[in-house]
Amino acid sequence: LAAPKQTIKMPRLMWRRLIIELRTRGQNRRESGAFLLGRAGAKDGHIVGFICYDDLDPKALDQGTILFHSVGLNKLWKICSEKKCEVLADIHTHPTDNVLQSSVDKKNPMIPVLDHVGLIIPNFANTSTWSLSGVGMYVFKGGMRWESFHPNADMAPLRLSLW
Ligand SMILES: [Zn+2]
Image (cartoon, rainbow, N blue to C red; front, side):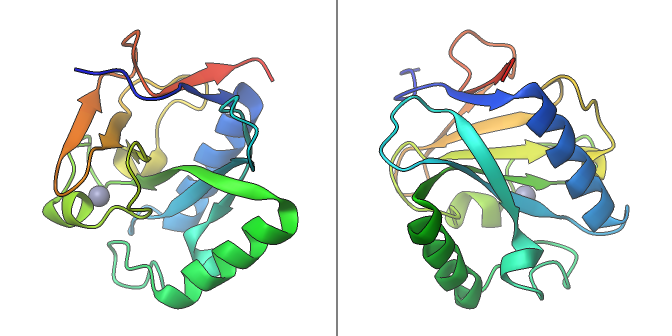
């Protein structure tokens, strides 16, 4: 396996906020998700914020599995340009502890660019708010190809940081 271009760093407190947010929005009955943002051009891989799918597209969670519409992407690009941010990764929940990608997940990367990172959180985010254990990590390699990583692997594409 080739290493991803860079390791994305997520401040611990933000990870905690994110997990609680995904858990709350999923209401234990539907998947929820978010885009993780870094400063545009920063190259250090630091996540500086996140935007939940249903804030961009109010209907995104209605089907139980994520269905994100182009209206949401338009809003995302507008916010990114205003705040000078770029999307570093996306994250969504699955209903059980199975964090393998669904065929939809594989076929439809939220951001179809090489080395984009997709994360999957088990059990509607009823998981640890302090660690990455149980998280599925995938790096998009074009077409339907993804590389998958154990969350504790040295080469894992996401790491928690102090700040
Ligand atoms: Zn999925």
